[in-house]
Length: 460
Image (cartoon, rainbow, N blue to C red; front, side, top):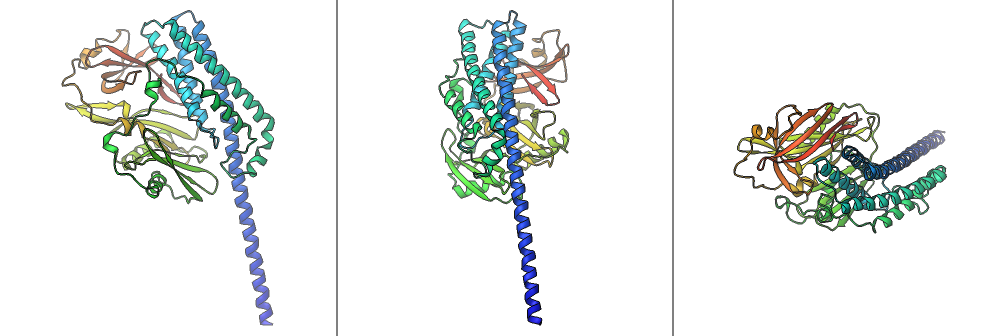
């Protein structure tokens, strides 16, 4: 009797364990499926946001060419620059496996930068040449072609939208099924952009400046192994997550690196680029979608500053912040390092780093120090500044009202060349501007408008 009773108890226990295992499996399946559907919805929203911004770019370029006054031309060209930046951000939210979207992001950078260069030229009172307007017209034609292809892709997505769940369940997470309209559409767009030449002009996205710089000498070191790159890349951002799989790929270029990608059980990934020389983490990006925002902007600032301090950064000055939308659950903050010149603090704008904070947990979800690693060198400052802050202030338009004290900065010209300048924050009517006066020549070099909104504080 006792033996039979023990057998029955064992069978009951096994049945309970089996039921729990099945329940756990169903729960895991539902969680994974929910995550996949959430990613799909995010990709679709990003696509339609991208279409909207590209159409606005095209309209702004056409209006700039047809505008009769300089003020209108500047407004429309600046609008084009804004929508180009927003389009780049939308592309980042619509990752398509097996399709390299770098060329698309670069195209938006080229168009936006070219429009900004022309707007600044007009604002200074310089003449935009017929060849420069013709170049804008050519770029407008490429934007128009791109808008048409995106609209066609959007139509295909709308028609097949109900099938995305089935498509995603049939392939490994992160892969793109052959009949995925997003995959097919962006592949065709990448083919189109390969035939679009870069404009000839003097700016950061011009062909001569698109070539990435190598690492600054201070960050060059011994060649690291793939295992070391994996360790550095996956531990750079604090996380207790376990990785279902990890892959490491070699990437060549101006900065040869290892691309390290760790995938979690829910399908989200963390990707880091680690230089093969010296093992510097160039950038890291976590694709996990954050939840409802709980952290304030000031709270995010403190998390970002604490993270930078933990990585050995010294005195850093915040230079701007941006969210995708006012309700976004992530915020990107930019910080520039400082140095001293004869007792005067100098802000080094070319060496800016970017930190992205999730507003639900306060975790760091992205970091980019590529500009810092390539630009942070020992600079040969002039023996003396010809123009001090008082002399430089005399160059300002008398109608401008100064806000706060000027500060000495290293700032990049549109051509990418660095200058030592005094930065003045000024106001006129309801607008705020940053005006840069060359500390050596006393010439007004750069004028930027400060755009503050619930989505961020940036300059244009």
